[in-house]
Image (cartoon, rainbow, N blue to C red; front, top):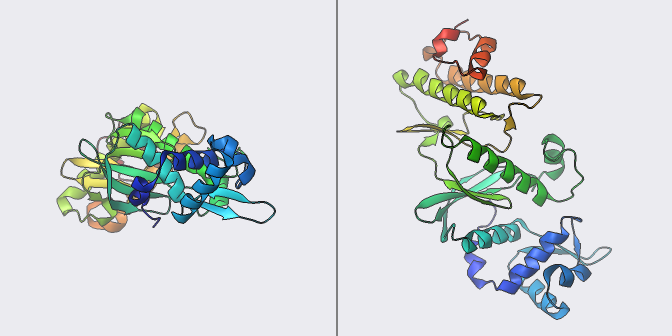
Length: 303
């Protein structure tokens, strides 16, 4: 897990953030930012840059390389610090608490505001930048050299989807967005993969999920990464989360991705609860019904 940078925020001066912003600006064009460019990028004097570099290096907010030239880049903690400062300045959050979840492409923390919320830091591209840049359609056609761009675009896409879908679709309520980070409502319930549904609940929960997928399609989005790991089951129903790979329904592959989502979630239920599920499912007809928002019961699609 990436270190929670919230603990060092109180130690940082405004000028430290000017330096971090200067490095961020330079990383739009180069993975490593030449030290000579930092005074102009940050608005600090050369002497102030020297001092701020030492402070930020000590706190592991930037990295240095000295091959060919002396260059700097933000660490993931440095990028987190910039987003946290913006949220604080906007009064979106007042404090950062314990981790809520850690994945290969995101870290989620509890944050304090008018009520407890969730803060999601996108990590796409941080450890596997080349692979993510090749696979994600929002990065495949550009020549950006920084993981910051990939993570920011993922957060933008997810936040746009949440704003469009909420409240008509059961997704986390979006609150604020900056850089690679999203503030949203905390999930109600537990991850579907960890839930143990009673026999009489199984088809009802699956039908709730499929109904929400139909509502999302009608609102203009396909999740495109549906699985038991991005559905929460709670007393008040289900919530579908993790939307950075979502595609609009006018996307060339939207129906294909919808069909894959449907198969993924139905096959999960068939594996875990075989006694409560139909032996065979007509996936083509089921996908059509969801696309036309005409789905009612899974039993209607028993092949």
